[in-house]
Image 1 (tube, rainbow, N blue to C red):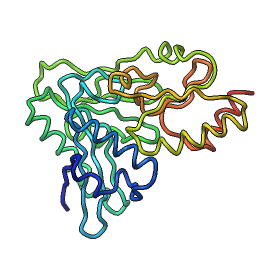
Image 2 (cartoon, rainbow, N blue to C red; image 1 turned 45 degrees about the vertical axis):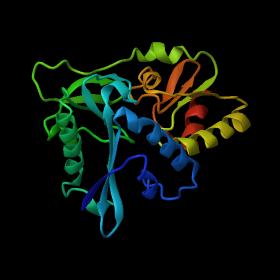
Image 3 (tube, rainbow, N blue to C red; image 1 turned 180 degrees about the horizontal axis):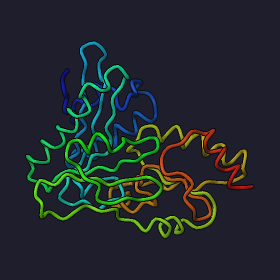
Image 4 (cartoon, rainbow, N blue to C red; image 1 turned 120 degrees about the vertical axis):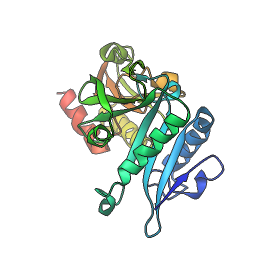
Length: 255
């Protein structure tokens, strides 16, 4: 196994979040996002297997520039961590990637490291981080947890930054889709959901582009400004969803 630390010069040589086709819109958008964020201290590291190529990814960034809805200045914040295929799970490779983050955070003399987890789909659960000494410092609806590992006991704790209901209500009437290019899967979801909203529900969605970390930290869910679906001032989805899931949600909402 080899850990590869990417930068603006070499990132195009590798798959991005399992995307291997550089022509895909999601790949291109994520590539541009990475290049924009590298100067802010972003780390995008790949776990490379001789047999299967890239099998894992960990992404983290100093808290001032995190795209999660947290206040975490002085902490290194993990955005994403995943491992595929399944045969590599349970062998300590997830821990290896967490340790990369901790090593860099210590090297930069930070307060520690932080991560947003959840019980539901789409994000890592808290178990991996708890065994590395992280502790839950705050929770947010519906099932998000903010965990931190402090290198110094007296360090201030990171915290969720949102009054979630108030933030959702500011989008007003109609359907708003808050999105950014931090996740390459968002592009496909936006295209399909936007078309379905127009054709099946006669709703023109307001696509709100999140362009920087400060905007992402003010999102209506703890996941940040990556993908949020708001209808009539209420949050319907807090992570990228399929077109089928969108139709199920809307059919139930519009009853």
